[in-house]
Length: 111
Image (cartoon, rainbow, N blue to C red):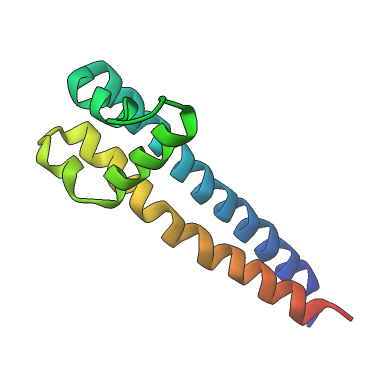
């Protein structure tokens, strides 16, 4: 039995699933930030405007990461915000095993 076509299909499926997982992680972060800007503008200013120094996209991104890694989003009691926060948190848990599976397939089929 030739398993090469099955491994090839599994490889493609894992690659696509991993890419989708990482894509959802990034998209969920963007949606979370957008909801914060639209619905909770005063709270968003806390993230976007630092206490000291100039605001920059990198500082805003870093502060957003701190918020996303905490349990603060759950305190808003906003179902959509909580959903995007959960997607942001758990999407890499889908993506990394898929990409590790891709690497295993590459390593086992390399000659």
